Image (cartoon, rainbow, N blue to C red; front, side, top):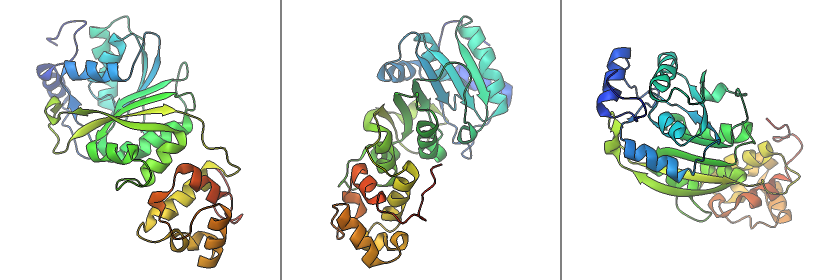
Length: 290
């Protein structure tokens, strides 16, 4: 390896590593490796990573962002599905930052229910685009120690995650993310800092965790209502939720009891509104939390 200890990975090093490992980035795994050190440091600064922070990174790939997080003094647990990449990242970090605190978990992020070491307080990742939203929501659900999130996703996904009620892009990801915290679109990331270069734009989304709405409904019940409300988003809530409540009339009664106009569409409701509706679900609808 020609790169020097302490340096971040550049374009030549990324290609050298990939070539030596026989790694060909695939669309199936959503692999696009960041090769620009300036961008990596910009992401770490935007995440406000401090020395001693425990950070979980999903999809570290060849280790570009991992090295940036470690450079900032973080303790990192990296979750990587590709066993070849998972095996290499330890060697890469040992070469560049021999005293850094890194643990690697070789697994599909959607299957991870526990992590080694101290509970992570931050999720910082360049998420594979094809599973970005499921991974984000899964980690927020399973690891309540997470207080902050900064993830790089496809720009249009960033727009959806950070969209407020009433906006054109507000939908299921927006509402579910709002259950866990306040999301905002952060920096735009040039497609030219990736290898291979994607054909879509990227952006960072930041989420600061807060308590979910006060409600007697479970998270699963609330999310069941969210899914139903947006399954046919052009329908009024009365029509969209009729299946959940057994009829349009029953849905209207529940909506009025929750203080929600049955003529509205789901895009107008906040997560608190969805929670109030979920409190009136029949006992057979989404009563067992995941």
